[in-house]
Image 1 (cartoon, rainbow, N blue to C red):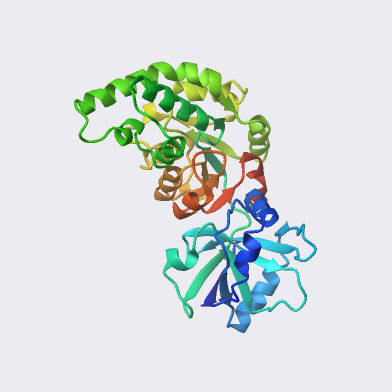
Image 2 (cartoon, rainbow, N blue to C red):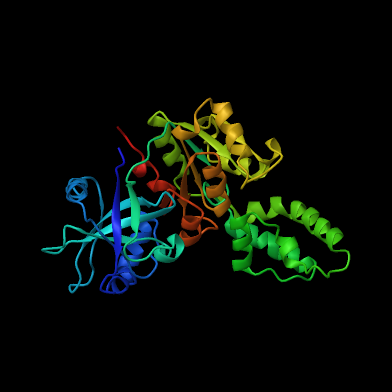
Length: 348
């Protein structure tokens, strides 16, 4: 069961950034917590004796350990949390003698002071978030179960080349993350016959997509094992994707078709993510409540659609979104890849 408590914002010594920016620490934060930490930590003080006692008890629960590779540094325990009902983060406890019992150091992929508009003396609500309870897990496809993000860039590049338009990789990834049209973003408003050109590019991209998929897309390694393990826990599994039959067929080539209880594609709804229409259709088909479900996706629009539907949002760092963007979009938890999903589920 997740616990909630409050801490008071205080100024730290300014040493947190020197730790969070260490290569070995950052690597472990990303792999174990899905957090590419914003430099430094948010320091909180536990002013209430009852809260301090509760925090001491919580430290006996499951945690992640960051192992120091530098003899001048110490190991640290980390406890995933949800901050102010908005952002995923973690409490970091350095494993040193006489570490203050009333002090908390918080990491997150974003500046918490800036994004929460907080200053010294303000209260911040924390919720422990080591495990998530659910009976149902719903997945996005591209970037989550399918390694297709580079394929989308190559599609944009090939289509753009035919129309004399340069498509930048990072720009394409950003558009994917926010569900925006490549061509509308690439073509200036002043372009002659702009809408007709956009339509032509869309049609050409549709023609090129099967070939690009065949050459540059694949199912992420280990997906079959992950889905089987989830199914063996009794989970219902579903898919909500903005893609169509080509992506679904690629996934099914891994022999996982019978593991899914329902699939909702772009053809099944009139409004795609970030609208929650696909989520609601999937929940209805499965006969489950949003509060008992988790949605796993790789983009900001995945997080937005999930939160809009009242579903717990889990972000995975295998696709178009980065840790900071997914955090800002409201992810309850961020994971490095699909293989760590089973580890964050409540098994009680």
